[in-house]
Length: 222
Image (tube, rainbow, N blue to C red):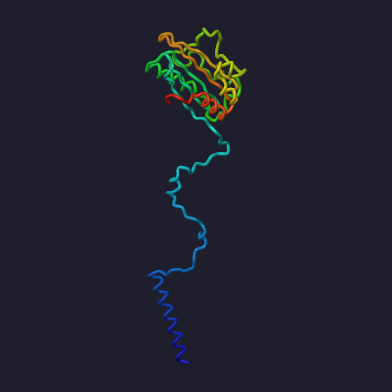
């Protein structure tokens, strides 16, 4: 019986020695980790590498928008004309002068006048809201209402687009035209006359379709 006891003692010493080596040198565990075996690992740096992937989380109220787009038409005789798209509206602003000062003033007027129009198309929803988007006399710079048009305050057309643009109303009429409002202004010291028009197309989609259909997205983008 001495030999089996010696074997057992030798085996125990061998196991102790292996344990000591594992503690000091580390032992590998051959058991596979199933916690993520079937999941593809994508490096964090790769998430933004593909421009087609939209990583921005949109809220439940997110919808289509028309951010402000402005184009300058320099082809008209003696006149600069801007066309613009913003939210559910589009329109024109024109000035009867063609120099750098006039161009800068025209763009400044347009951007100031359009600052309150939301890109999401939530306004205007009524004719009164549309007219309220037209700057009043003296609200922007030295521009005062031109009384020669015979209308006190902004004019309004809410019948159809053909009553507004004779021969050019089709893209607006076919894409949801609601109404158009506008005003004419004078800057007496400079002998400038400026006209401003804003069209309610009823939706951002309708505004975009009318804007491009009328060719208002042509010219120099500002």
